[in-house]
Length: 339
Ligand SMILES: Cc1cc2nc3c(=O)[nH]c(=O)nc-3n(C[C@H](O)[C@H](O)[C@H](O)COP(=O)(O)OP(=O)(O)OC[C@H]3O[C@@H](n4cnc5c(N)ncnc54)[C@H](O)[C@@H]3O)c2cc1C
Image (cartoon, rainbow, N blue to C red; front, side, top):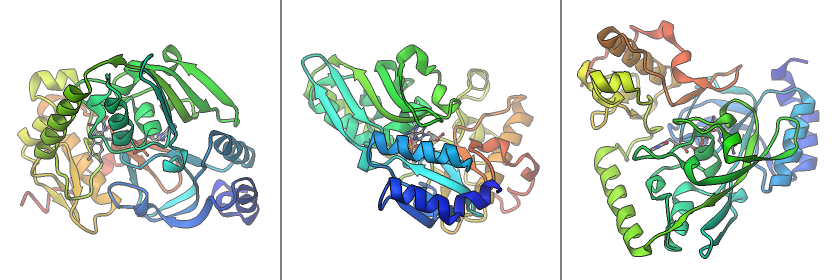
């Protein structure tokens, strides 16, 4: 049985439904699961509500041999307009527990808590160290997997331990060293484990001052980043060599004249050139063309190939960096030109 057949097979659906009653849905539109609001139908979506439920789901998926992908809020994922043959394991707010002890600075949270909510609750207890993440949409598990952050910080810095379900369905603990945190990546991008919870240790701070800092960060983000149109945040990761020549990716894309360039319904944001917005009706190929175009033009100008932070989920394969998806599409965007 091929992976595609297995994903939609009634037997698999029935097994998952028996193990996770009411938490399996077929034929869901991926456009509903990702921040770009782009994507065709996926065979199955499973939404567990406890670490044990994640372990049960993963064990069944591993046993079936079906292709499956874990996501949080889809705020860093470009789903394909052709959809996806496989299973999406979605770690969302039903797995959103939070516990903190302000006297020790220990915070324990489940992977489906919304990041701004995690940060606000932590700041309100007078614990410092995560304020940089206040404006980042997404679930905690996704943020940890990406080692996301802002202001040159990463969420991994204060992690004590991550609990994850390994690809065979067993709960495992990873201390900080085992998490392999580096700039916008971690071992969880490679090892196929599903993060279900994380423990942090934060230093004491002044709740009022932290709140003011959070407000300032949010105001700066509102000013700098496009908020009104669907997008997935920064498309390309910063690169020291590029930084030394044209600056951060947004400045580099602007310097090569692409700010505001459209492809179909997608556009390199006229506000911040490292963002691609869906102006309405964009397809995944529109976004991929713009990614390929920006990468090619910056490469022609500097000899540096930018790497995308955003991941693409193809119809018949695993998540991959979006720039790996369409080198051949270079040249098809830009004809529509900058507005
Ligand atoms: C407007 C906007 C602004 C943004 N600003 C920032 C920013 O300032 N800094 C920043 O770092 N990012 C930023 N992002 C990107 C994004 O919000 C983060 O990467 C976010 O943490 C991803 O979380 P998610 O739940 O949406 O993960 P998803 O996008 O769903 O997944 C991202 C990756 O994490 C993996 N993953 C998700 N959940 C789990 C899990 N439980 N276990 C294991 N792997 C998992 C997925 O397989 C995938 O590889 C921004 C995005 C938007 C839309």
